[in-house]
Length: 390
Image: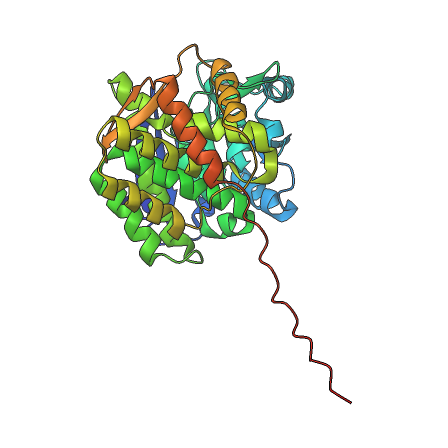
């Protein structure tokens, strides 16, 4: 990670993430939002028109601040609202935004600024990556999850009810991470998602990356936004390195934990965050790897401890192994004809492999048994005084 001098003399964190024909520069510092106009002008050349894509629910004063900064840099701006949450991850939503941008006369030579969480920035990345020869786009993430994923692995869009079937290219020119903006937009669920992706990415990237996340869990307070942002930039670097690898196995390693996570999400819906589901998938595949790939049990225990320090708890629900198996098959079949699991041999060494049905069934049986809701604690019986003899 590097430092770059900004106009105020401060030294923001800087991370360049290159993947899939795109290079995204991430800058993080208090007040870095002030650079949005100059960064966009640098990307497009001569300022002309800028579309400001704002996630629904953002404070009006924040949008006005960005609008003022763009105008000061010579852009004529107009606003377009983006849906919030999962509603943004829809091809229909993307086409609706595209229609509005085209109607306003936005060309690939103009600029886009998008402000919001992971889902909204994913939609903006799809727009920018498919706008003519690719439009310059600056992202203003409001969550750590968005900061981690938007530069290299934005969420894919849904179509016809199938979530994640339409590829979303990474297309941001830059991300500007202002801790004040992230503190305003962060919530418990998005923070759990961020922590789970930190662990997932580091586990399959390298021992050094895994050690950095362990150090973060031990020494960085949840209130230390800049400390968490620093780790988020390291995670973005790790994910970008894997996503751009020439080895298919390295690229696929970022799927670790997803088969069970998607099955749990299908069965339990919004009862837990996706970060909780992903953490359960990581625990599950680590145990598969212990049996099938010789993963050191100390690594499995270290992973469990790391997830616990990030407060990524276990789910509590009643379902049968058959129900979970069917959900896993159904969710996997929507995206691929191959059912594979990523089985690490060690931290930073993982390959996708098939798992025999009987082995999978035994592990799912143990998982379902361990995740049953715990019976409520019985209250101590009240002591009834013995009757006095008359």
